[in-house]
Image 1: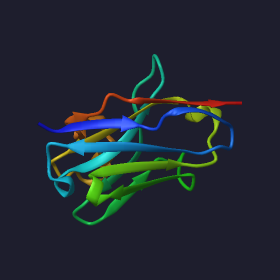
Image 2: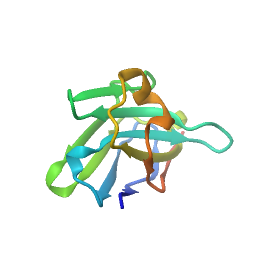
Image 3: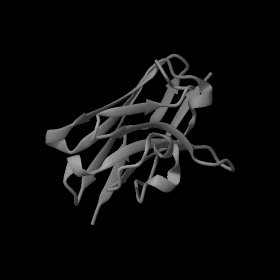
Amino acid sequence: QVQLAESGGGLVQTGGSLKLSCAISGATFSSLNMAWFRQVPGKERNFVTAFRWGDNKSLYADSVKGRFTISRDNAKSTWYLQMNNLKPEDTAVYYCASTYRNPIVSYMRDTQAYEYWGQGTQVTVSS
């Protein structure tokens, strides 16, 4: 049974940094493509970044490009989202998601591409 567990959220001031973690269990780490999404109350869940193993493809939403970086520690079966120069509009619950499928690039941004989800971690950026 694949399980994802996020951690690392919190309260930070504008311009600050946070590093989120997503620990994966119940699966071979390199068999799962993964992504980060975020959601604010009353709105849809939005794409942040994704990684596809087959061709080491990384994608970023335009709103976070140059500020956020996805990385991993294979030995710990953990993905990370390093978030720098945070802005109030980055405030959201952040979710990691994964899939055994190999989505095409355009589909990597879609929540429907991922069948496994973590519980989310709150990130709040104060102005």
